[in-house]
Length: 272
Ligand code: KIV
Image 1 (spheres, rainbow, N blue to C red):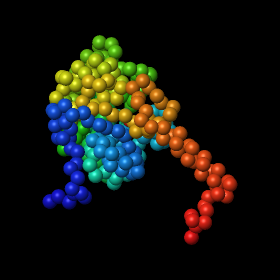
Image 2: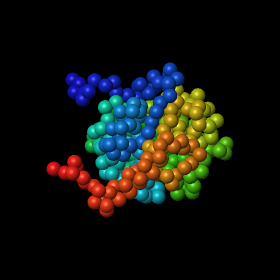
Image 3: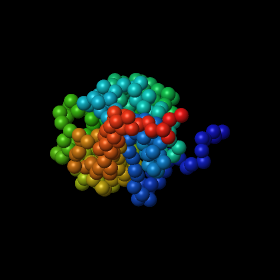
Image 4: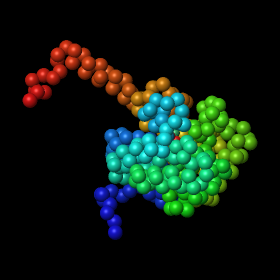
């Protein structure tokens, strides 16, 4: 028996596959809270990613490593409460799946059960194969993440473009094919040469979503706070800024402060 909240046609992993099959691009953006997720869903986004970039954007950490499973569940449940249509994918945070496959399954189950999310995303290829398979065997949809993997930043040493060299590019293609073979419903490719991303997209039958991976992929993802101009300290070449919300917010806050100091706010109409 269905107890769906509304009649809106929800985006599913099957629909993403259909979109790839008919050549329709997939839109994906991040959200970590109820208000942002509500606006994104109303705008018609296909996929909302509760990314572990919340560690940087919401908590101000330098990397994505510190965010915990409990914190990801908190962000994901806030997002889920706002969403009617979009597919909500949640990052398994660093340390919640790399240990062994039982731990990985436990973490994924907690995310699904406690937040109501629709899928999880994990960074890595062959190294995490057992965990991916175990989570998939529990009926939890998994999205892979290859290329620049921010959870491995201390191994990489820098945030520069990945897989420029042949050996790394070959491994990336093998990992992408492996994730598809395991049963992942899609793969994110972060910050790799556009030509390589196009090649992977043509070889895979599952959707490939790019961030800094050019236009030959099946869809695009950005961090919402970056594309809205709220986070202004980060402007890599691949980022298109669609608004200057940060500057607008600062102006609004400073106008408010002036009004309060000048005893102009509240006026008679704003009182009871
Ligand atoms: O955490 C995140 O926001 C991500 C995107 C950059 C793909 O993984």
